[in-house]
Length: 424
Ligand SMILES: *[C@@H]1O[C@H](CO)[C@@H](O)[C@H](O)[C@H]1NC(C)=O
Ligand SMILES: *[C@@H]1O[C@H](CO)[C@@H](O)[C@H](O)[C@H]1NC(C)=O
Ligand SMILES: *[C@@H]1O[C@H](CO)[C@@H](O)[C@H](O)[C@H]1NC(C)=O
Ligand SMILES: *[C@@H]1O[C@H](CO)[C@@H](O)[C@H](O)[C@H]1NC(C)=O
Ligand SMILES: *[C@@H]1O[C@H](CO)[C@@H](O)[C@H](O)[C@H]1NC(C)=O
Ligand SMILES: *[C@@H]1O[C@H](CO)[C@@H](O)[C@H](O)[C@H]1NC(C)=O
Ligand SMILES: *[C@@H]1O[C@H](CO)[C@@H](O)[C@H](O)[C@H]1NC(C)=O
Ligand SMILES: *[C@@H]1O[C@H](CO)[C@@H](O)[C@H](O)[C@H]1NC(C)=O
Image (cartoon, rainbow, N blue to C red; front, top):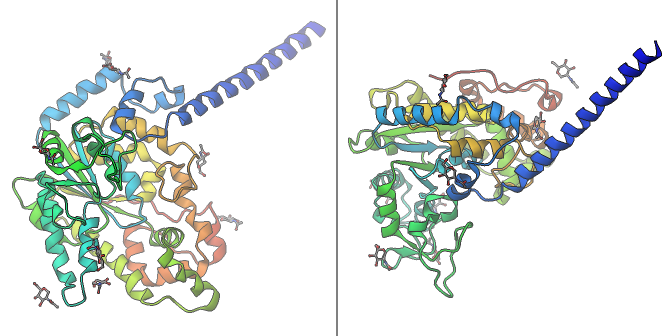
């Protein structure tokens, strides 16, 4: 009898010890993963593509590596044409994060982050008489078309100060594009010239746009992320251009979450908080809020109605779905574009959606994505949520965002505010 108890006791102790050890092991390997994360460049992700990951991360990959590359190769042959992807979004809708799905693709992708920033800045800066915002869609169209054909000259006219001999130190967020920090475009550093958006993984001199254009031409595919285009008037001519094989991905997010995020990120949105305290809505609040929502909805309605010029070229994705199922959604997006999914993207997603590190950095893409996507529910006062619901109702309905009736419901995490939807 005693021996039996002793055996059971020893057995239980052994289990406890094993459990503790494996906890320690998994924690150590998690720490190691975190330590490897800081740089987000093609080079580093290539370096990591061979490192061993903890078993749980391996289990999410499908098929053996050698099988995958064969599959990819086959797909590549089928979809041989150069693809031109436009990620169409609005500020604070998670587009930097989703843009990384393409930026991290690897050596076959030429990715640009918000090139139209230059155009908007210059056009908005002009004196009132010449400020003609009705020209913006046409200018955006021409600049985008140029860039998708690897021609930077239409963009150059809007870079300030103007590039000298096609060389500039001012290209907006150059460092957010892995391509623009590659060896071929990394010219020697010039003493006393300040690189405003200098590369983070290495020191480079000013960007020679001729070299950038050559690099672009040598790549298999292209992707551009922008929060500045919502009008099909801008994009239809690109879709109808036989030189381009356009794929449009429209990224949307709960407008309540977008407002909460803008209030945190942009000083000019601070006045929205006053509304909560004294009931005075900010100036133009209707136009700002409703205008944003309507533009997004109109774009989506046209996209989902699949006119001939957009057939099989439009995809709608919700940020909330990406946050919950990043890998699955990324694969879906790649399937839609006809570009093979790459191990580097898989690595990047694994590294950047399972960590809590860097979550306080507002412009960071490195966070626990599902937790992050829901955080706004604690930041946004109920009165503002109500205001958004009043002004953005049709948009929220179209995308499947559930209304809240009271403050309790807003912060009750067991109630999902995002209905299951598929958009075809
Ligand atoms: C990763 O593996 C590839 C081929 O399997 C090899 O060419 C490359 O040098 C490896 N990279 C590293 C950083 O080990
Ligand atoms: C590829 O996958 C199949 C099963 O899907 C397996 O039978 C085969 O051995 C794999 N080939 C390689 C090279 O791993
Ligand atoms: C905007 O205008 C100001 C003053 O007129 C000028 O100093 C600045 O360079 C302009 N910026 C752009 C992007 O044109
Ligand atoms: C130019 O027009 C835009 C849009 O109509 C406006 O937001 C901006 O403030 C205007 N800029 C000037 C300098 O008037
Ligand atoms: C703005 O541009 C459009 C199209 O070129 C033109 O019809 C309109 O008169 C312009 N408005 C102003 C105020 O310059
Ligand atoms: C930019 O690169 C091109 C192509 O290599 C070269 O011909 C040109 O001289 C470079 N421009 C400058 C200012 O260095
Ligand atoms: C991420 O957030 C989700 C939802 O709050 C939580 O279940 C999960 O444990 C978090 N993961 C990490 C690594 O913090
Ligand atoms: C949250 O919602 C669930 C489901 O409606 C409900 O059962 C629960 O009581 C709510 N919790 C709180 C704290 O209100």
